[in-house]
Image 1 (tube, protein in one colour):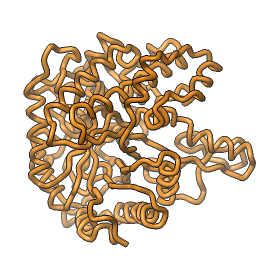
Image 2 (image 1 turned 90 degrees about the vertical axis):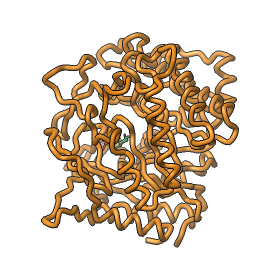
Image 3 (image 1 turned 90 degrees about the horizontal axis):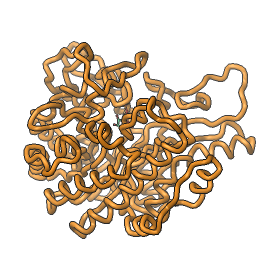
Length: 474
Ligand code: BGP
């Protein structure tokens, strides 16, 4: 079973997780530059002022900043048709509100984009992947302040104009959906997504609602702006979704799983239906949150409708309202799914969940979808022959791609690409470690900072290369 010949096979990466070079060529600090390393057992620490004795994995990353040509050549060798990369806002506006953009930052991304084009790889640019300039946090209080929307739009205008004619696909935000006031957002996620220190949040419901609203508004305004700069541009927003199954057919449990699945959909609804959802305003009112949609904002929601939806899918979860003996709590609350295996980091492996999610999203919005992230974080051992034999990764990806093809070829879902997360080993966002590897390409870099940064293809490299050549015929 083959996919359309235009299907965008490729991978996804984010600046702060691999570029390194955190203080060169005029770059300012971004929020992630101030988060330390960590592990599954030890959470990353947030230190808005850098501390000498701490290790910050983003500072060196895997030095993609200096090695992107070599890395892009390997992606091209695998046959990539597309690469999703983020532009680090703090390279372009190091102080957030600089009078002029930093030319060196613009030049760096331009050469990277040119390199992709040279290899016939379509650049898909994420405009916000947790790289808020720390200066905006300090001076403007991040997304709690509407002024940050204007700073973001200025950044968007600068880069979209600079790369006009070279880049067609733009992504306004990565995974803003995790900031729902009803969810128990961890301090790391709040810091990563919104650039706000959790300890400084005074009224959780009110503040998270305002942050979510301002980011949604920023996205719709960016969509309009990007279309105005070039009518050929295609604009999407990426959401990280975790479908939830009911543990039993008990109606209360089914209702809970429905709510858990759609809980953080209000931003997608706003961006695709052209209106900030009334149900969310109703919910806010009940919670005592004070939020008004002005006529000017209403207009912005109408004018900023997405062209496509990007989905990050890693796992599903199980909702439950009851407890039974032997119940084990799963990663995001709920209970462990006894039918599914888990990764070494406790993420359930659920290929069918991808088909479920693709169908759910397509039937709800009827917009083209692109899978912007999916992959397996695993501990890779280098064999005696110097190669990682990652059959477990091949198995994971194979099963997910089978379900993607079922969704497209059997169910008629319009999915135009698959971008595997982390095609080259990089720093994990949630744990801050290198030990959790996703790549087709092994990078010799370790959590104590050691390693010569050399790149070596894993077995999955050749598997993916062949899969792309055969257009998905696994
Ligand atoms: C997504 C983020 C990515 C990436 C991925 C895997 O939520 O968009 O930046 O990191 O998750 O997560 P982790 O790196 O924690 O394994």
